[in-house]
Length: 329
Image (cartoon, rainbow, N blue to C red; front, side, top):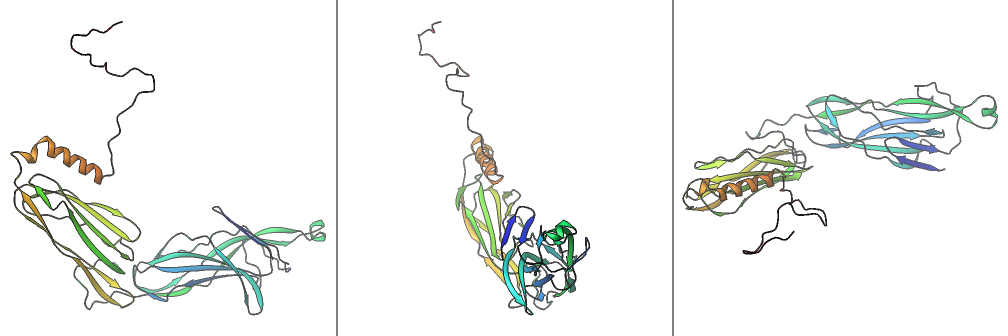
C-alpha cells in the first residue's frame, strides 16, 4: 500500500489499493463502510473558555480516493481554530483495514448548555469503475463525494456561583501575575514605566489592562501586548511632585477546571523614590524628549537613521572652512 500526502491548501491523497465495485453518485457517500467520518472530543464536560482538542477522523477502506479536503465543523456554542495537517496511520476495525487521516483543531466553548458538536463534513474524489475501454483496462472515473459524521455531545457547564470572586471575568486556567517598575528612583518630572505581565496555562482574552492612577501623578493609557498564553501591559507614569510613591500590587482571578475551584494570583506593591527635580523640570525640553522617546518605544516606533548619500555624491551642506581660508574654484 502506498500513501502520498501533500498539504498546500488542498490535501491530495492517493491510495493505491484494490477497489470494490461500490458506485456513488456525485455528492453522495458510497454505500457500506468503505469511507467513514468520525468526530471525537478530548473531554465530554468542559467550562466556557476551556480549550480542548477536537479531532475529525477520515477512514478510507479498500477504495481509491484523492483530493481530500480539510473538514468543516461549525456550531454556535464554540469557536474552532484551524485544522492542523493530518496525521495518517493504518488500522483494523471489525476485520476491515483502513487508512485513517486525523485532523485536529482547538475547540473553545462559548456558552453553557448541552450541545451537539457536528456533524462534520469532508469532501474527496473517489474513483469508480469506468465504462468501455476504461473498465477493460482497470481505469476509473473520479466522483466527488461528501461525507457527514454523526454529531457528538458536549456538556458545557456553568461556572459555580459559590466562591466566585467579584473581579472574576471568565478566565479559565492557572495563571501568575507580576508587576515591575523601572526605574524605582527618579526626580519629579521623570517618566516611570509600570509593566504588568499575566501568563499561564490558558487563554488571556478575559484579562484587560486597567490603568494605574495615583494622586500627583500624570498617567498615560496602558498599552497591551498579547501572545497565545500571556498578556503584557506597559504604562508610563509621570510623578509631578517630590514625594515617594507606592505603585499598588495587582490581583487576578481565574477558574481552575481540573480542581473545579476559583483561584487568585497576586503581586505586591512597589515603592518608587521621587526626589525634587530642577525648576520647571516637568516641562523642560529634556524631560519632554525623554517622554517622547519612551512613548515611541512603547508604540513600537523607532527613529529613522540619518540619510546617507551615495558613494561619490556631494554632501547636502558645504564643509566648514577654517578661519582665514578661501575656497578655490
